[in-house]
Image 1 (spheres, rainbow over the protein chains, first blue to last red):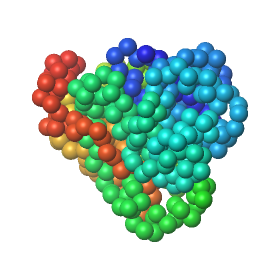
Image 2: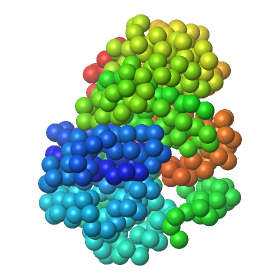
Image 3: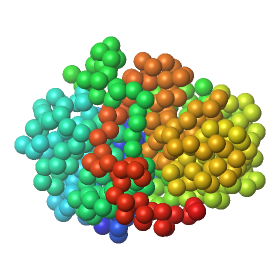
Image 4: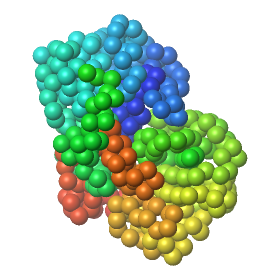
Length: 209
Length: 209
């Protein structure tokens, strides 16, 4: 089972590494980070470089695709190495998935047309404009397309996907293995729980309108 | 504010990247991945390579240290590049922290002697044997030493630390930014919630006794 996580400059690190940490534990899985060519790919903060061992041409037929998001998503919405690969590779996947604004990349490739999907909380309107039925959920399954909300939601999505692939018991083993018993010190992870001024500040500076 | 995350072969990726994703957003922060020399460092599954841009000698006086865990921890418990650097660098840190079995590395360096600390759930006895007051918490502050439970707990710990450093409002902004509103599909992240046979299987194959 080949799982490919395509990287692009200014991706968000946790979007990629959260699902990676879960899916790499699936029996018989091989996770490959890829980019237009093998290289170190820098995240949005510029402090983290993850190595893409494969070029897109090396992994034409993955079983699973996980597209991360991040500020660099904006540069991946038009025909180019990632979009071209995605459209072809999706034809033979078992699961095509995204985290955060990775859903916008899938939508731009035409893969979420009319499908229920979710994305980063500030990008839900944009996702709808791109043709998806944009919903507010932690993660959404629609056929073989699975989309997660922002950044950390990729962990939840990957566990749910692991359950579909390897069964609940195995997914629970993975969850225990990463001791995913979340206890955030604040209740500010969704707009509804965050202090209004915190959410308003985000909306004010958002690149999505 | 220089934040250094030391890497070693067979570290667990999410141990490092969870706190990274939070702490890199702190105002004026510079996060640096380091190793005994600058190089790509491979995680425990062998599929992920994170680039350590700095050698330990390049970062002698970080403000914050975050030591990840992972199977490779076992090779970092005796004098060597990481232990030597850690003992010296700790003398001038504001915060010295760990995720998962990274606490065992701190303890082996003598930094947790008599201190309350936590670690990966299967390693709590080992942590006690190394001289810490080992407790079962998601994360523990004891003076400038902050330790987190397994893997994903580094996200919670880093948010709490961000709150101490930059205030609750700022930490809440970070939480909303990574949409950390966890909704795991199972309740198996701690031994108490996991199906007994799942927990028993883990205990049976644990490298800790």
